Image (cartoon, rainbow, N blue to C red; front, side):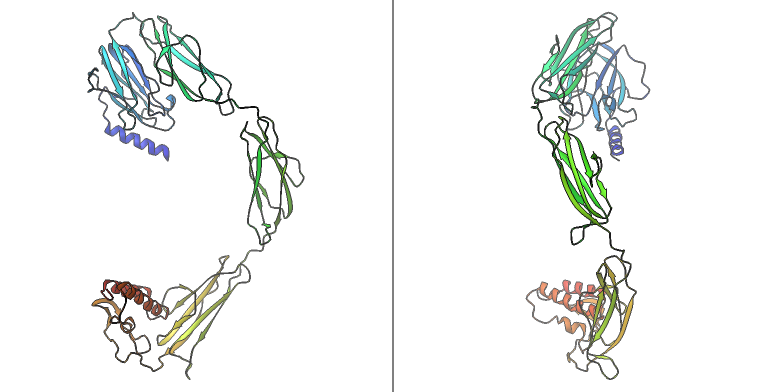
Length: 509
């Protein structure tokens, strides 16, 4: 995915940065007499290599920012010739964007005509402002030799296991030229300044370094700048300290700390000197063997795990030991909970509940335990059961119930039916009998029904009472309607409509 995103970015940039010189393409033109090559890698502070001198005339420019030149991240760069800064030639317009993921795999070619003088080039991508350089162009000369020398660099010295050089590194530069011959070889350390190369360069400063180098032949042709990078670290003292090795046990455990079915042991070792070479373990008296992956133990019983580690210098830690017990897992729970219901309240001669009924649901599970109990009253949806359900609305009612255990087994749906009748007491003799629930002129659209004791929903809301504030009134309405939802008078949608009407009102404001 990252590669495709970077390719897409490169493609987008190609559409907005014009190639003002002869277009870069996979099928280059016939090469000019002189070839100059620029390269880039992951750095945003410098080109990896760039020519410093050239002769006037037709020139083939190679611009490569590819995996082959060290670009491992897909970072796009441009090679742009300056056409505005005073003191430089402005007769070459070149602005080539290259990315390892573009159609040319990051290698582009253009043909230009150079004139004597100086050219300034740079990367035009924001954030790359320090990628800049100069190209000095002289009148043609040097006979028929137009090929720059070949120059390479090699790093040598004692290295640690990470490839760092211990205390010092030596860079040897080699240059060859099959035509007019090598005239000078130059080098610089860490972008300081180029100086003549006469013997291998020894670098002793601790840290990261880059040595650049170039060569010029007798005809005046200068090679592209090459570079080698390396790190120098302090040489360590002799390692006589053994590694530190630990074991971590993981798995499901019972109340006694035993591992249920399986225990997994993960071994870890650290060594701040020469580094860890090997980790070994022995399980239950067996011979020591190399540790490569976590150790999985599923045989029931007590187990003994011995382990040790050895570093690169040959120091071996003292044997460590962990003991643990694996027990057989319990049989899988496939039995749903047992669930029951009771209905309580005052009943008349017909068995109806006078004034209201309270429904209590109970559930038990002898294996994994009850996870949840749910109920649905009349046509309402399933609701989590947390406390006995009070039903006061007159009429016939059906309450469905079910339970689910921790293992995911759900009981069959069951139900109980009962009838609630009014107790004959009119608690709201001067009832608000408007057809819908209206709060401070805001019509909720919900029917203003009798809640079972002579009081309508509007009576229970009591919008004309004295409230400390508007928020307190809205919370009062939420509490009243929640009770009516539990009792089956309202559903959740209707409750929401009434609470929104209360929120729009100015009651208590």
